[in-house]
Image 1: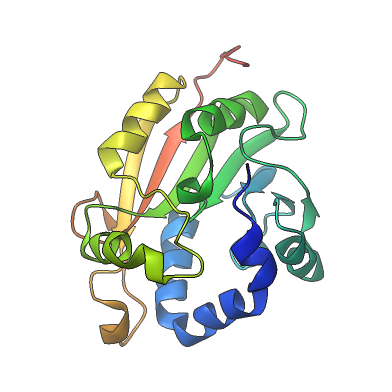
Image 2: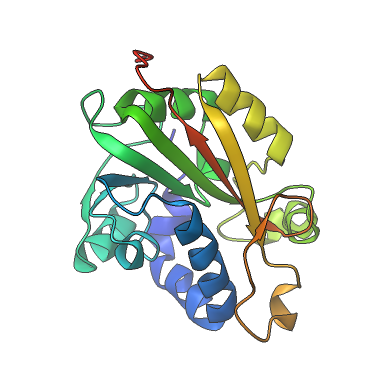
Length: 217
């Protein structure tokens, strides 16, 4: 069952978080941008209000929350209802897919990665941006998630857990970048993206569907 209630009820509060934390948002945006292909047709899974898809030039999005879809459409995204485990697209429809702070809200991450594999063309990439559970911010979010309107129903993941799920789904050629090296209230400028993981709280994983693959599930 899609965990949409907080986003339907508090969509404006969601937008305001990015306004208040605009340096963290820009840091995350640039880290994601660095991992996306420069060309091709893209899809954001869990597009939210379009705050990532719009500046990244992604025209298509799937989003279960009606309130968030409406905001995404206002930003020029072709946002349609749906969930990560059952994407409303044909096999091999996209060159790349993006999930930003979405994986912690899906019911079945393994099924979500299989669906991403299905809708990608051979050689296509899946890019996942998320808060690493083992990072300073991840540990704080985990400890206090029951105090948060948005993160109360979330399940946070570590990098090795997601890497294993991606490999199980058939992805390969996995690479990482990271940002957000300070606590949110200490960020004074856009923070750089740095290869790897284990230092930054926001990690971006890029994984590729094999060329010539017929891995459709």
